[in-house]
Image (cartoon, rainbow, N blue to C red; front, side):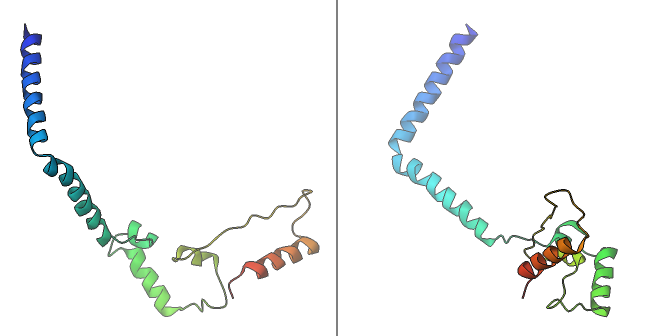
Length: 125
């Protein structure tokens, strides 16, 4: 009994909805496209933030204040030397792991010369 009442009510309501959609095809064909365009256009205002410091540290944190103080007191000439700590600044960096093929000592003269050659090839000019 309850099933028949629910079935009849759903059938008539979906039938009316179908007739309404069929009688207004332009609106139901263009409305999703317009909504998609409007919502997609709102994403054009967003900018990608790639500063790890901005994303993870609070705006007035002690770490940011100390970092600005250290950068103002001890400026780094970034054109000649790269420090490992500079990897936290924005930019594109890569790491190379060099291992010995025969499990030899990486600190002997031959291997250190090869490591320095690799460093010279890939260091920024």
